[in-house]
Image 1 (spheres, one colour):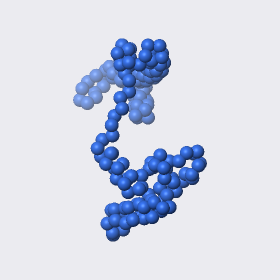
Image 2 (tube, helix red, strand yellow):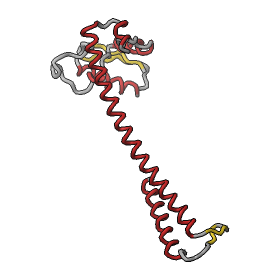
Image 3 (cartoon, one colour):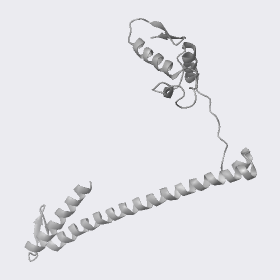
Image 4 (cartoon, one colour):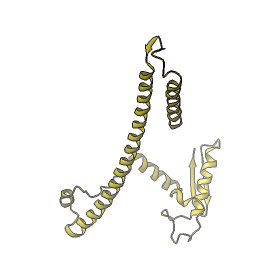
Length: 186
């Protein structure tokens, strides 16, 4: 858009210069079947240039004001976090006290039924665990075992077999890895 706008303004300025140079002494010129004076044409073209320049300046002012707004909001948000900490430490964290300041205690949302069903199925099949437990983590590397209590290596192999088993013609298979049974069904 900027390149197109600059090209348009350059064309308008060249037209003004050309009219001033070649038609300044002409009393009238005919454009689009209408008779007009060169001065009126120059005035119209100059008005277009001024309008475009004003729009560019307004756009820059808008972006500057928006950046200032974002900075002010960030400053206000940081201040609200500190205020909430102060209120909790000095006045308590009851809903009534926090509500007086426009704050609230976080509410835990329960997982939806589909998520619960998937988690139960993973645990029942012996292939549970988080995705970060599956990729290249050795026992003791993080100083703790995965949340599922299984070896990350066994989880990795179990996940790899799941992927391979999904492409097989059979509807299910049992895989025994490090003393664990992983039942897969496709």
